[in-house]
Image (cartoon, rainbow, N blue to C red; front, side, top):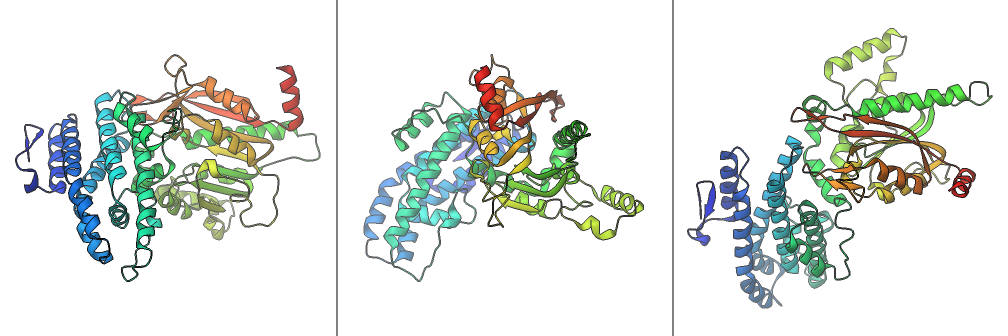
Length: 485
């Protein structure tokens, strides 16, 4: 198999390893200026053909491994795993390319190719045996979500069948995620839809486009944690953290003016949640507005590792020269040096936003529950969600009455997003104002402020977005509103 004129040509399939085929496809793609995706399409077909042609030999290998040692079974079944590995590497190359380039222009061909790779990967995962799945999960480089739940003890041969069965279930779950990604990237990919129906017989297709699987988002952002701030702040003129911080301050000052003649003033937010905090870029603009706890939640553990190192004077968007200046400025105001060592966040946790409760966020270190957060911020987070109904309901459940909610979305118009949201060529979701307001109202929020914004630049062009500020109504206010409707 050779790359000829930017395409892959079959010479002798057995002569070239899957890893070499992958590198040839990448080289051909790069030689085209990363504009010709045909090498990846051809690679996907070749890998799937090679994978399926080896199915019969794997079946006989599994049969003969009954009663043999665990190590022997692994060695006999592992010959298809390099093929799966090449599929994973191809997917990761294109996902990284999309993320690093932040391509906003129409890229139908690119998305169709990535969809093709995902459905081939899903097909392979759905056909792997239990022994193969376990071996794949034990590979430290696999994209298999949940692989860390598989524990391998080569000296323990007990319950091998059960271990293989559990690993196979893991493969099926990942096949579903991959097929869902394929269908989301390319709505015309009938193979992806058919595979989903096969994996989920009761699936009606309604959930395919709702959001990217949380584990895949975490895996992807873990890969870019170390360069995330630099890419956003320097390369894309990213301004969302400042925008949400400024709006939070304006709402706080507005509330103080209203309470000016009252005995009880609220000079600061008491407890705040930075939902999808990432490396802590928004925390820089929220910390001084919060009196008690600033809690950060994100799906990426590596992003949170970076956020943990942020203090009032260090990290989270501050460059070295800015860190020195900020500390000097604060010391000039008679602040002690130790003040600058205060972490931006009081608590950070790896958690999916839709799985948040007061018990596992604000009060996870307490035996008693309070009222909840009075400020929630989601800065550039909903680009990984389709419908916002579930996540906004979760936000309402962990908030106190009259709490403030601030977030940004990329903007879509009703005519281009009849569902209220659409998947952009960049792989991010955009939302209509109408959908956002409707879902927020269903969760008990009332729109307080709205702005059209430019969250960042892509390829020198401004990205259209919008900034929302909501207040959570109390029970009595909700009843009045319902009657008025």
